[in-house]
Amino acid sequence: MPRSLATVSLSLLTVTLIGWLLHVGRSLLLPFVIALVAWYLINALAQGYKRLPLGPFRLPGWVALPAALLTIFGVSIFVFDLVAANLTELARDAPVYQTRLETVFNELMDELNLKDQFELQDLLPNGIVSKLISAGATIITTVAGSASLVFIYVLFLLMEQWTFDRKLLRLFTSPERAEVTFAIRDAVGKSVRHYVNIKTAVSIMTGLLTSALLTLIGLPYAALFGFIAFLLNYIPTIGSLISVIFPSMLALVYFDDLTQFFVIAIGLGAIQFSIGNILEPRLMGTSLNLSGLVIMLSLAFWGTLWGVTGMVLCVPLTVLGLIVCAQFPATRPIAILLSADGEVGEPLALHEHADAASSTKRHPEE
Image: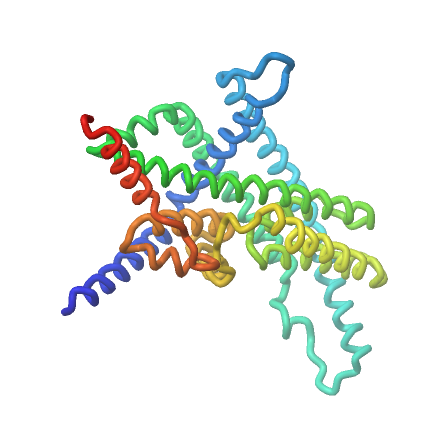
């Protein structure tokens, strides 16, 4: 067998095995991945607290870090209780909304006066409203069940984070390789931090505007739909569409006429379009350098492996893969294919080696 063919076969086998392990072990991996996200957010918030202007003083790290920890988990508990209460109320009213949806659909069929009439069950599964609510309740129950484990993971990460750099440094026999690794880590951190900060800001804006519009129109569960819009905004493309469909469907069966339905559908669509297609691209710029097709494929891949959590994390994970692949000659073609314009920059290793060589030339006695 030619060497190149053997290399390709081995690479495909390795990727398949890793994908299988990620899927099989997701019940073990997902709590740790969620803990990593929480740990990152806590440290980012702690850095923000340390920069708060308090006259001539600044918060010390030993105060900022616990304050960030309490803030993140306090907000998480508040949001969880709010969503759980709304889902409970929505589940209680689900049969009424299901009946109303069938009535509206039958009236529409009568207005169209089609030759071959069909029923709602022909388009949507029976009891679709109850099934959607049950799916949401299942996600909340799963998150609640793993919350204690996530909290333990986060505590251990916070207690041991001061040793991470020292351990990483001692993994390598040469300081040059360690410096390259630190440079790669910093590049990944910079890109992911830029993405998370902007995405979180626009997601909060989307959730608040969604809740405000639904409250103004008088649709119930405005806080729940605002949280759904906030969460789904992290999911590329389809997240925005879903966050418009759910409240629009409820408006269709909750109000007696279609005026509020059109106001909500058009209003939420305008919010999603303005933020997702005008504001966010201006703030994000071209820092991610990811192909749109790659983002959709990544969404499908990680969604299949890890469900909603994978969809939320698909962009940061793909950015991580692009930056790491760009540093090595063997995987650099993969990074070029993942990028939007084929420009992935020079490998950081080349810069380090060049600096080392120039330093040797400047100081030959060393």
